[in-house]
Image (tube, rainbow, N blue to C red; front, side, top):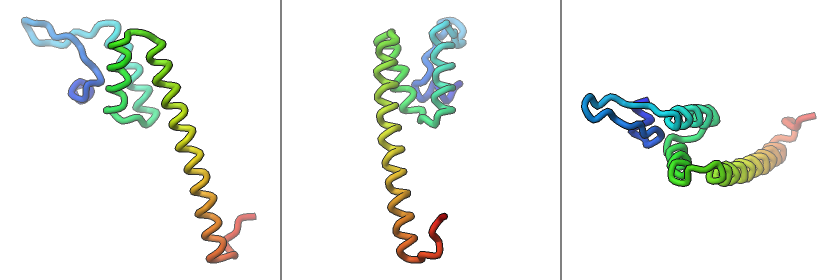
Length: 102
């Protein structure tokens, strides 16, 4: 939690007298979303940016736009990786035809 707070992923309020963190419902929401995004391989910087947008806009529409951008980016990167894998396979086949699959 401290790492996430330092990275800007979480921004809990602090009790002015004790300095203890005070987690509100939106902080729990942010932590749950951050957990899901980390499991999906997103960096803390990226997650902090998304949650910052969500906090600033405080709307699901902002989150939906960000997630759509991510979806397009992931699709594009996935297609590029598939293309590269095909090209690599063709190069390997050209060097050593005995490695052909099938």
